Length: 387
Image (tube, rainbow, N blue to C red; front, side, top):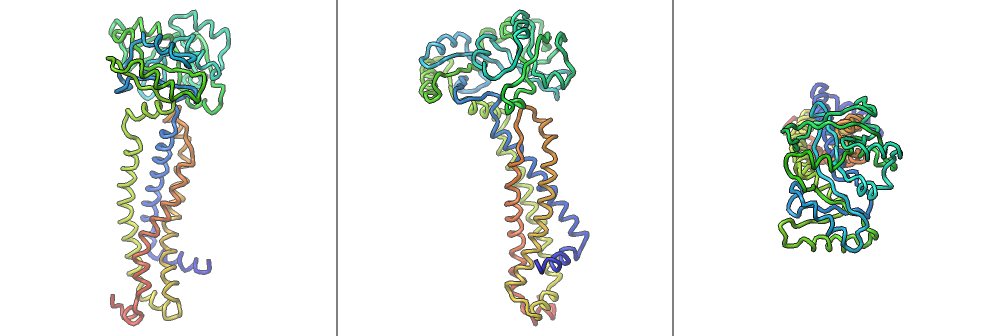
């Protein structure tokens, strides 16, 4: 610590250059923190489907291909399957495309039997939902977000499903609200609206009699793999072969439809840090070149080669760590904004912790070459400014 004032003074020898280098590193680590958080969130997403006793059955080749509704009876006959329900991706938004709504057409009895321990909904509102063909149950957080109330008619625009009239706009009557029993699932359900599969299937212009996927609850979670294999064996070599997997794996496969999120984010970060290596490395090399006579004087005063090496490395660490911590703190401050933009995805600050290790690695990579050069300086040549 006794050399800290010396290192700090040399770091600010050229204030303008140092400030711009710091800003570049801050922006890079702000981007690192944001992208790592997003990547972490998607890789740990569970799609709001919890429990080791849940399986999802989709088309074997793509979850965008539908399955016949008639498969439900065969799946229900598989030993170990306690309940089966069916869901289809609706793809909806309210008024503007940025107002995404996770609208799900469900079969009331089987869906709530399968998820009986996950929802809080009053008996009166459930009765109203069952009795209203166009009824919708809406998460309380979503009601609050748009200022909806029970009794409102809500128009939703589907990005996929046209009605018989050719319109993509569907209207639902809000008959009640629900909340998640598990507080950890509240974020995943915050954009959810549930409505009747019968209303959806009767009203859509194409795809009648098909579903997006089946969801099963198994009696013994330890037998999940065996039961999944039994389900898929039922439809082997048929025109609609299936793939049955744990609910979390299905959620990840669903996310990857939009591209390999992790690969895209890593590619962006790779490009950013590759550029940053050159920028910061050039700054350190130039800083040391300008101070060659001063480093020679330090050696003349008794500073050993190891000490000179350490001073240059410390300067690099101070530069990179100061800026990196500032960037990571800014990305931490951005978490509430990210949560608003990625509703239903769990955000965690743990994702930005590897940034500290990256900052140390960056400092060593850019600081080591000039530090080694400073350590090997010949005092006579350096004082004569012969480099």
